[in-house]
Length: 20
Image (cartoon, rainbow, N blue to C red; front, side, top):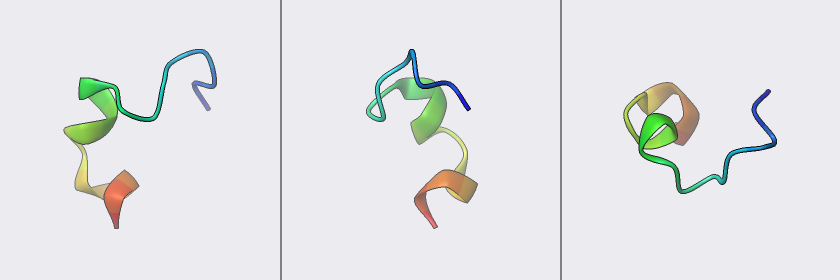
C-alpha cells in the first residue's frame, strides 16, 4: 500500500506479516 517507501524500510521489517 505504501509504494512510496522502499521494501527494506524498518516499518516493513517490523511486522512478520509482510515477510511471511
